[in-house]
Length: 70
Image 1 (cartoon, rainbow, N blue to C red):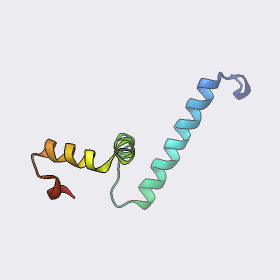
Image 2: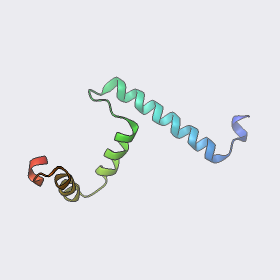
Image 3: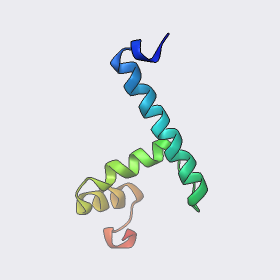
């Protein structure tokens, strides 16, 4: 199947797959701590939320005071 004849969804999927592959390789080369794609996604979601809300939920989940995890 020619690249020009692929449905848009498949082209976007291929682009996303390639972008994730490049980002993963870059992380492996530069990072001291290696994170999975899923871990990156969780950190990205957390970074877009209100910090007080996140800290409270993390503290509750760990059974600690919010100030202990800052």
